[in-house]
Length: 94
Image (tube, rainbow, N blue to C red; front, side, top):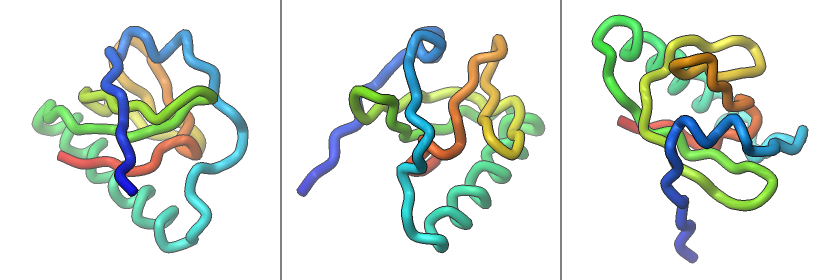
């Protein structure tokens, strides 16, 4: 089974709707996601490196390539105050 993530522009994320439940079930995957987010935050702040965030809204799987500006306990903050709930992120990659 191949999972296809549809590319989306950062500016269109604000219009998306996000369910409350987490897309990850396994505790190890959740810990790995947290670690990846912290790394992405460091790369974004220090080197302005763009990373890929694979996430899911209430419609489908999506992919955005952007710089992470901040991470709270519940949200990933992108440029211009655009946010993605952490519980909707599948993975992060360079």
